[in-house]
Image 1 (cartoon, one colour):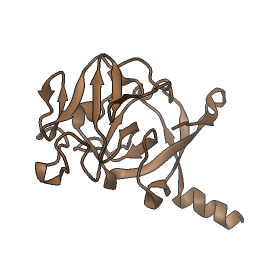
Image 2 (image 1 turned 135 degrees about the horizontal axis):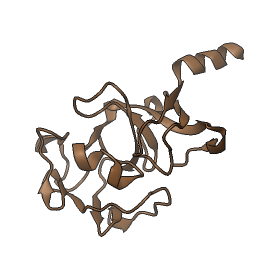
Image 3 (image 1 turned 90 degrees about the vertical axis):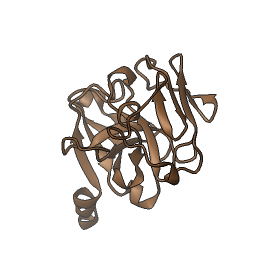
Length: 184
């Protein structure tokens, strides 16, 4: 049993430290949390997961942590501070404050306040990889920080690719005053 626990700690369960405000209130600066490194080898990310993944474009060699808001085939829209997935407003008790931007996926791109993200600076796949021009493409995910207005996420750099996901955050370890499960 001890050997199994040791193998899990080496290969499956990893610890991380939060150094930014992008996931407030779920994760605070200084929080240390555990992530399951096997989760996404068994199944793809799900709506609401607090997920770790490699940056979508050249960036520091640190993993990002964001909340999965939309999965392949979903529509996503943000209007007047409300996030809509598949036409229905999301109940987001984890959100720090409503987004101060409007967003829509259409025409094979992500539009922020009516302006398309630049494919040279954002991960926007070519139209041939999309199943429909207004839905999250297969193999891609739309992720946002819980602190929407202070998070570099899909509204800045486009989609996160399935192959980039490395783990799901599930438990805040430190400080002890924050010790809790991380809810999807």
